[in-house]
Amino acid sequence: MVHRDNNAERDAVSQRANASAGFPGSYRPEDVCFLLKPIAIDDTPVAEKERLIQAGLRHYSEMLSLESLPSADYLEVFHQAFAMTRDRMARGVLDLAAMIAAEHANEITLVSLARAGTPVGVLLKHTLAEVFARPARHYSISIIRDRGIDQRALRFILEDCQRDPAGIVFVDGWTGKGVIARELKHALADFKTRWGLTLDSRLHALTDLAGVGVAPSDEDYLIPSSIMGATMSGLVSRSILNHQIGPDDFHGCVYYAHFEPQDLSRWFVDALRETIRAQLDAGYQPATQPVDPTAARERSTRMLADIRARFGITNANFIKPGIGEATRVLLRRVPERLILRDPDLPEVAHLIQLATEKQVPGEVDPNSPYQAIALIKGLSDA
Image 1 (cartoon, helix red, strand yellow):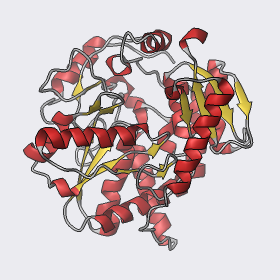
Image 2 (cartoon, one colour; image 1 turned 180 degrees about the horizontal axis):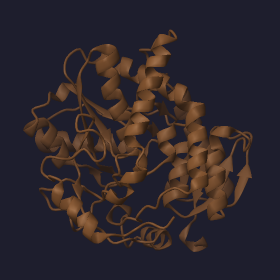
Image 3 (cartoon, helix red, strand yellow; image 1 turned 180 degrees about the vertical axis):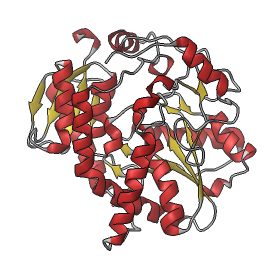
Image 4 (cartoon, helix red, strand yellow; image 1 turned 90 degrees about the horizontal axis):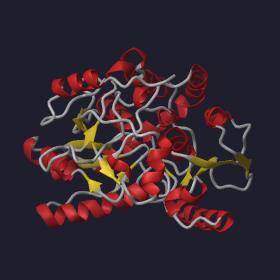
C-alpha cells in the first residue's frame, strides 16, 4: 500500500504535541514519554537515500523514507509469527525485568532507545510494576550512529524530571553487531565530560547477538515487535537529526497519525501482558542472571570476518546480522542479498515474504551463526 504524505495532518500533530515535554505517541500516556520533536519532512525514496548516504552527501539521520502500511500478506505472516513466538518474548521480558529489579534497589527509570527499544520498554515498565512491585518511569529517546545520544533529552530526564542518575537503565530490543551499544558508551562518556554526570552505559536488551550488553539470551530468535514499523512503535518514525532540530530541541520524528486505524501498538502490549501472566501462572521462574556475553562476542567477530572475506565487503555497516536487523534492511534500505540458515524455519517467513515482494536475491547457509543476515547493496552495485 502506498503511504499517504499528508503535510497538513503531520503539521497538526506537530502543533498538538508539546515538544518541550514529550508525548506518548499512540501509547497510553502512562506507558511512555517520547522525548522527540514531531516534525514534517519530505519523503526521500529509499534508493535516493541510499545513494546520498553512500556518497557521503547526507547522513542517514537527516532523511526519512516515509513508511507505508504492511501488505495484507505481510500482516498475515506477522500474526502467524506472533502466535509462534509470543511465549518466548514474554519469558524474555520477565527475565530482563527480574535482572533490572535485582540491579536497582531504589528508583528505576527506563530509557528506551527509539524506536526498537520502545515496545520493550513499555512492557518492562508494566512487568516491573505488576510482577516485581517496582514502579518505574519510562522515557524513549534518540540515539544515532555517529551522532550520539540526544543529550537534551537526557538532561530533561535528569534535571527537569529530577530522576536519580543511579536509576537510569538504557533499553533496546536486541543487539546486532553492537554498534548502538558502543555508540551509547561513547555518548555517555561525552555526557560525563560535558555535564559531570556518570550514567550506567550498559545496554539492556532481550537478546544480545554481539555480546555487548545485559540480556537473558544471545540467540537469534524472532522478537515479534522487530518485524513491524510505526504501527508497532506508537506510530513514531525512527529519529531524525537535521536542520529542523535546534540546539534546545529534542531530536525529531514523524508521527504517522493517518495510520491510527491500523495501529497495533497498544494491542501488542496488552497481548504480551496477558502472555506474561499466563507464563507466571504456568510456573515460569524469571532468571536474574544475564547470559555470559563471551560466546556471542566471539561468534560476532568470526561472522563479520567471514562475511567480509566471502563477499568482498569493506564497510561493516553493510552487514546486518540477525532477524531484527535483516528485517530493517528489507524494510528501509536497498538490500543486496538475504542469507538464511534455514528457509523452512517459520520465524523467517516474513523475511522471505519481504524478499519476494522486493525481489531480493537470497541464499541458504546452514553453517551461519544467525538465522538471518542481510547485506546492503554497495553504491557501485546500485
